Image (cartoon, rainbow, N blue to C red; front, side):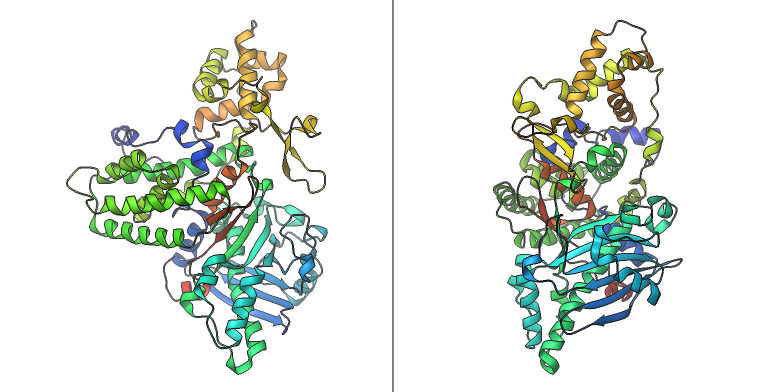
Length: 558
């Protein structure tokens, strides 16, 4: 990730944000997608490598029941989304993870499936967790219709009319996924199968491909149903309206601990984004094409804001702040860049002093957008070999351990863990779905099953015992007497080399918001229109305004 000489690197240091500023929940919970988001990385790759797309199978009846195959044909390999459409009774439609039936189910197949493969998959994929798939399948997912918008679009198209733009913008998707599984779940191919494939090397590239092809399926399905209902009077959706359609997603607590359990991966995601911001801020001038690109990005951000709906009090407040901040950015740009050196840094520093966290994180996204040549290569740095960080160096002097705890975990040591509000919650894995959940420590049972996600408290407990240690001055000797601190010792050694590896907030406090963790991760995916439904789950939209397969083949930009 380094760039240029040692002298240049020293100069860049002045433009870097401190992890203590970046890795706070309130800021992470204000994140927006950027051009380094995983879906943007995928679309650039597909376009740059001239991938081809087709739909060799479409056997769906007038009721919308059947199967379809969408192929992505690359320079070396082909991947096929196998989709199964179902006639789901309204009373069975649910976004909850405990649902057992869905409007559509999917798998991403490695290659082109045969008829025998399709028959095998049809017997298993609609069952999701209750079925089994093979290492030829790379992901498993399901989706439900947005009933109101889905029926509106089918009805309008069947009558020969286009759907209402207000209706489209109020929802943003025809279907929303309730799970997209990969990496070995339920028999699917393990991550090791894909790790040496260039097209799958970045984070969640296979899952993003599956969701992107799912988007094409949802539009094809409504047009198919409209044609069956309206006959010759039916029309297809106008291209400019198709672009407004994304894929929705409902994401809950199951995803929240991911960032905590993968500290090196989190570091690499955050560090790539921070390095991108640093590179832009360090530019000594603003080129005309970059200025023009910034204004285009601002117009797109305004469009996102105007179509962003939420009734959750937290997000309502953030949207009010964002609206004011976008107006402030427009006003600031009227006199920008001026004659000062480092105009991008000047713009950023103005944002830090003038905008809310929501607006600052939007400004970050905006100023990265016109600098693709400068920052896009950083996407290659966002993977992680987490096994390399598993080993504990027992020779580490305890003096160094104390210094790292004081420097990197000062936020944790400042918390009073005797205060019930500081330890009000605990993370555990549900017996029913084997997914992470959040319990209330003083009103619910199960505290004995707590997962080690309370990093702040673990750091404070280790610091206390290290301060009282009278034995040999090595970490190995200390851990021999205190093996309960091995987990924290490993994380401590990780953060020495990976400064963005820790969320620097108390994750078991009464006022902790899991949706902040969710939003941070989903922004890296490329999600927009965050709509919390509680403090523990959120709806979002993916691929809205992105090109479709046929658009990429026609040469349109991602």
